[in-house]
Image (cartoon, rainbow, N blue to C red; front, side):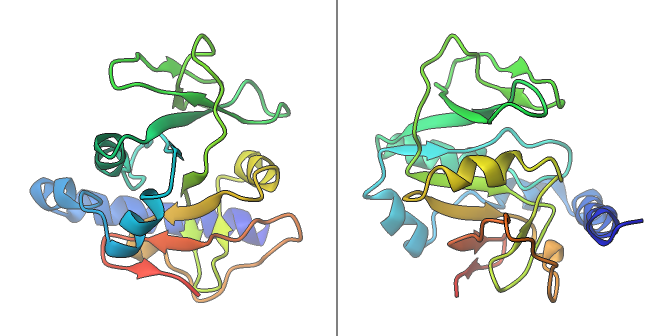
Length: 186
C-alpha cells in the first residue's frame, strides 16, 4: 500500500475514534469561536471558502456563521468530476446543497462563482511544516495553486497531526492550521 494511502487510513481512523468517543456537547463547541489571529484575517476578507464536512471531519460551519455575521460572503467548493478543476461557488444560509460526484455536499452551479481570499481546507492529516494530506484526488491542490493570494487555513482535529508527512512538489502548504486546541503557524 503506498505511503500516503496508508497514512490516510491511519489518520481517518484516529479522527473517527476521537469523534465517536467525545461527548457530543463538547464536539458542538469545537470550532465555534474565532481565535484572535483568525479574526484578524477575516477583518480584511471579502469571501471565505468553507466546506460541508463529511463524517468525522472538523466542522467549519460555526466559524462560517461568525464570518457571515462580519459581512463576509461564503462559498463552497464545487467538483464536477475527477479531472475538472474545482470551483468555488457562492453559498447563502438558506441555499440547499446538492450532492456532488464524490459524495460531498456543494453549492449549486445556479449560484455565482466566487474567488475566495481566505480558504478553510479540510485535511486528513497535517504536520507543523504546514503540509496538508488531503483525500488524494488533488482537487484542493490544483484549485489552491490558482489562488496565489488566498490565505489557506487547514481545519482538523488535533489527533490528525503527524510528526512529518511526505510532500510532493504539487502539494500546496497551508498558511495556518486550526484545531480544536490551537492555532498553528510557522
